[in-house]
Structures are given as C-alpha cells and as structure tokens.
Length: 120
Image 1 (spheres, helix red, strand yellow):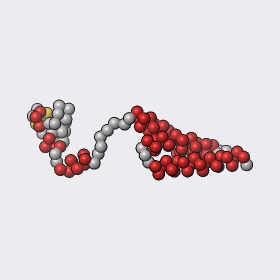
Image 2 (cartoon, helix red, strand yellow):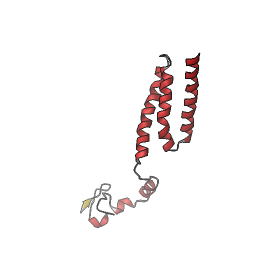
Image 3 (cartoon, one colour):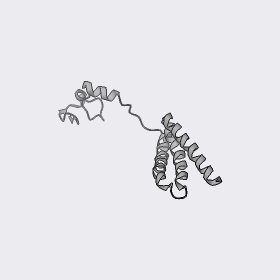
C-alpha cells in the first residue's frame, strides 16, 4: 500500500504505473491533467545546452550593467560587446533567431561606436 501524492488515499501497489510513481492511475488519468501533461515535453539538457546557458547568463549580466558604465570613457560599449558575444551561444542553441539578429545588431552598432571613438 502506498499513499497517492495527489488524492492522499492509500492504494495498493497495482494501482500505480511503476514502482517509482507517486501518483495513482486514477489521479493520473484525469482528463485535464492528461491535457496539461501532453503540453509539456520532459527532457534533460545536453552538455552543450547547459554550457551555453551558463555563458548566456554571464553575457546577460554584462548587458545589464552596460548602460550604467557608458559614461565612464565608453567602458559600457566594451561591456555591451562582451555581453553580446557571451549571450550569442545561448540564443543560437535555443534557436531564438530574433535575439540572434538583435545581438548581431548590437555587435555591429557598438563596434562602429568604438571604432569612431578610438579613431576620432
């Protein structure tokens, strides 16, 4: 006998899909619960996705602090470039092409800004 984690009733082991299941079959086959579960794909991240996410978070940090660093001799422009480069793998692996285009636009724009700042 086990206790279902949804309804809280004690049910025999035959009322569960497998040994590791904590939800009984009756609670698991409720129509709205099946609809919700069909909308979610359960999977683990690959090592490439995990690495890209961690690098992307660091890039997002650089992008967040960049506007505050712009007044300090253009230091913010350099952090914008670093942030755009570091956040590119995350959006590339996730196939968010609009953000890839936005990051590329950021690279070009601040690249031109730094070029004009150093030349002129």
